[in-house]
Length: 129
Image (cartoon, rainbow, N blue to C red; front, side, top):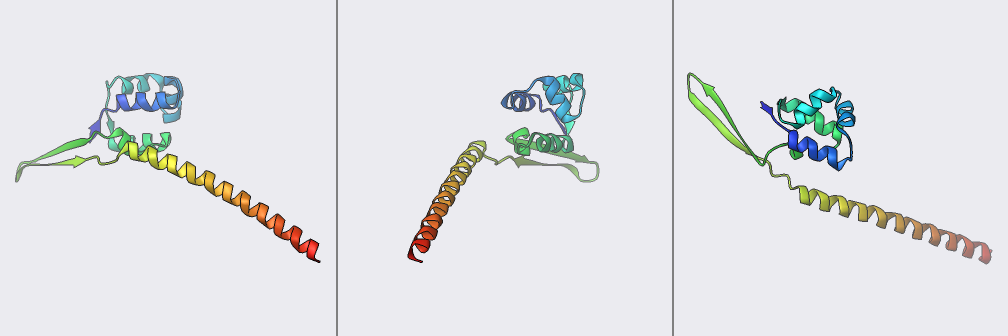
């Protein structure tokens, strides 16, 4: 299965504030090949899309359409096909990232408070002795 991912590559590149040349180097292709990908002049296999997502450190779902219709013709049984839905919610992912950052900051604050309490505890022990 091959697909065109130009708009999604443009979006990923702009999110990372990179040039086409930088993106091409990151993906291991020439600038001209990358440019053709962005212009949807060429399509890529799903395996390549998975590789792009991995290299760019973004979910593969960002490259997939909301739904895909896959048809396979078989002379013996006739037409067979199905639709796959992309149920990944990008907004939910961003919210989870924000919540994760908040929790990391909270952990750091609590660790700092624990350290302060340990120092107070040690001070009181020394004073008592």
